[in-house]
Image (cartoon, rainbow, N blue to C red):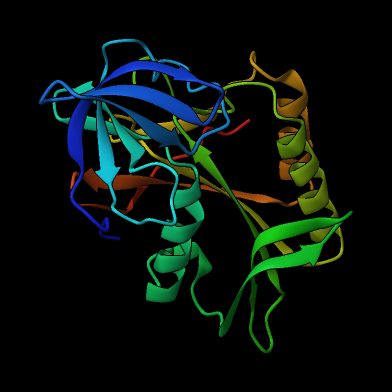
Length: 235
């Protein structure tokens, strides 16, 4: 996925009101950027951090910059735009790049299921169980190289695990896909101490047959795409 415009470097001044960030461009100008992330963004919102913004000149948009990446050092990036996760996964599904989810003829986004919920992707094919795929964006890192989820309590995420558990009980495939928007992680595990309820629901879901897979991302100031699969810690 190529960005509409190549990203430009800036320095973070502060993130506030969840969706806004004051930033200083390299020419000294201060601008307000859209922050497409409602999470805690642990370790990714400190004053003075190097960040990367996508500029735009769309008159229909209130802000001319969107915050996309955080610099992590040693050439690594973290992607903070959670809205990119589903777009990246859809692109990868269409290209057959997620080996665990190949062989399906139809890919439907935002299909209704569960209790007034919508699954991120419903995959169907004749002669195969339907596959219900939920996508979660991962930006938290634990030492030394663990990608961890969640970065704060997520009641909604726990609800999704319960609904996937029900789909598995009905004989469907149910898949939790964790997309790590960092380039400095080599494996995945739950941040159990941050949300014990989510961890308990995850363990129950896995015992019921819900699958858990994880992929990282390849990132540069010109674009972002699905990377390689990461091992998932077993409970």
